[in-house]
Length: 342
Image 1 (cartoon, rainbow, N blue to C red):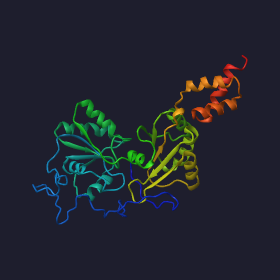
Image 2 (cartoon, one colour):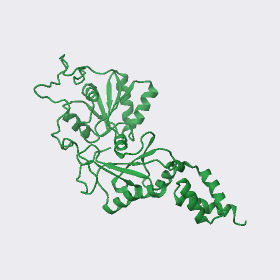
Image 3 (tube, one colour):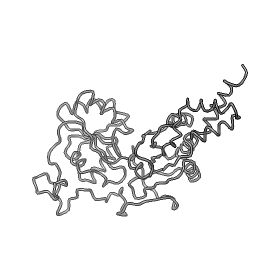
Image 4 (cartoon, rainbow, N blue to C red):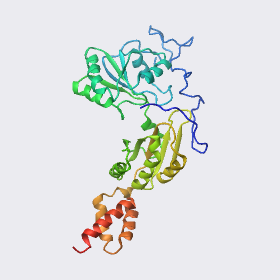
């Protein structure tokens, strides 16, 4: 996914900056391996500069196969030594946008052959990449930002390699999903990455309804222009849960806002769409909110014996944590089926 430009946030927003005070996207950012007088990127044999020699490039090409390489999500320094080694020594790098990847490589003094691999050419490019590895080449797969395969066409390439019985490995690193989860302050013992929700409100609410009783923290990706309406739909369907909206992660103007879904929806509706890529983290339902649809029906049938639809709805919604709108709709349906004369 493309990485947006930084912007200065609202002064009242909760903002954290990099400890260095530097702009990580500026072209002057020094690469992790710099060519200073005491630091050489030469591949000739030298004494390691640290106890285990971790800062020393491999100096040899990795074994043939597909290497899924995580790249920075904002700050160019957030890349592992192993990733730099593979990018420096592989035969070719398959990437979403050669311009974006080319800039990253330039910052780290890496010259490599780049080939495009994205959703528009994946079907055509995939066989050629497989052929390269069969011929003994090393191929690195990167996305514009973060870990490939997560919400990008890299998944089909990995599946194809698995089907062919070809070697594939992953080099862990930056991930907007995990970074947002860490910063959210919400439970992390169980979480579900739900990706992008549908763009239309009706389909979005249906998708949220299917996730409503999942006993886990939910993580979504969302566009800035749909942020306010998506948060409003979440508040309506998921109920009064704690949440966090994160954007510009790892950049100088990184922003994290934590509040209830309802308050966050109202805030962004009033302020307008922010800039940057956005990740939303929503807390899990209350323990009692894990009631199933069948449980709701049973409770409503009993409640409707002595209460109005309105009162029965309030009672069941309070006990289960289900959104009143959904409980009310079900109560009306049950009242009509069970208690009205045929």
